[in-house]
Image (cartoon, rainbow over all chains, first blue to last red; front, side, top):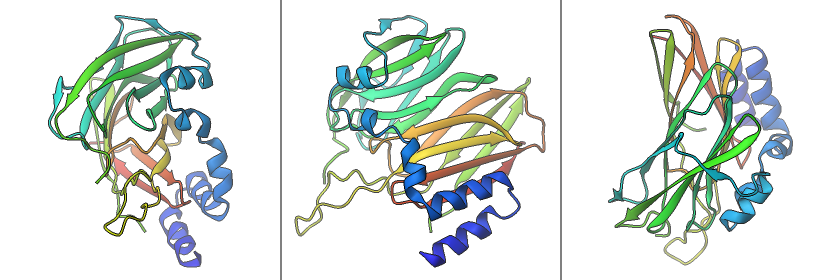
Length: 155
Length: 103
């Protein structure tokens, strides 16, 4: 532990506040964890996750574009991109309905950053993928099915 | 300690595109090893990206994000030579911070 802390100090050196934050995170991991939305990430169903996030029943919007392949050969690496054309987009979440933990990732988008993120997720089986977007205080979503030929969860 | 991230940032027409490839096992806690023991979950939970000192993206990851996570996003502004810093923290309290210059 001490050794790790030393490395973190080295890595963080000269980065000022950031380095300090990283160090604080290491010394007191529970502080860092408190920020992580465990409830939302632990949600086992779409409705539960929507509820935790305060999204209720989000409206389907054409201005939320979900870029995924129609068929993913390898479920361990499925590229997912979300673009929101809604003004004032402040939050984007990616959800995979049939994964054991369906919330894959969420992004908080400060002003000046474009509502356009891409990442890669694991998918255990063919499932609907949802993009949840919060814009101007309201929630919107888009949905797309991705067929998985080889699952990415479990050995 | 985890290996360094690979960060590419390129400015074009007033918009900077940042691509990050992290090196992390992203173990879900669902898998079992050959002796049937559950492999404990180990994944990145939080990530922040800064342009110079301004926060440009914060993200939370769950175990569904792929091994060696990839992330791409765009923000307005950013000049050649500016600094982009990305940090993550995982569920075991490990963390890593790397920086790159905008090209």
